[in-house]
Length: 156
Image (cartoon, helix red, strand yellow):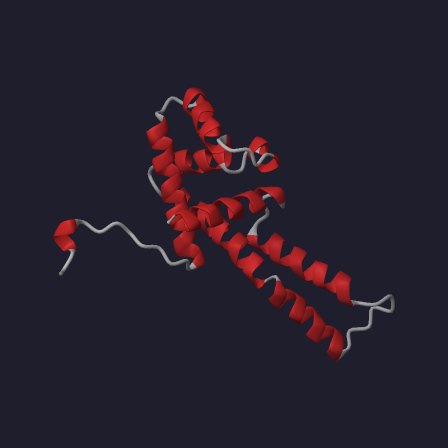
């Protein structure tokens, strides 16, 4: 699950870097970027130009799926009982400007410690919230996640 956590962290970071847009704003940005790369000065939309724009959009499909998964993660967190706390933990730990600009070892634990002091809760609760957010992101993105299975449920 460590690879899923790293993937989710990078998706949350990227979402923060691009300014936390809505799904519609982000898709419009991708389409505008494709238009700028393809359309000539004459603004002629030929069949080849349209095909090239579609190809550029396909090239950004994985990026779009990541961003949409992050947006849907935040939507799903909004309906949970602890959703507000989980969203705050994700934003303060993974999407905080100090973390985005710094790749030093231990920055996550430092942000968790800082949040546990500023927000009256334990570090263990924050890590549990972050794990829940990563799990929801993985489900939204369609990543393969192996859940821990109780020994009673295992069939040998």
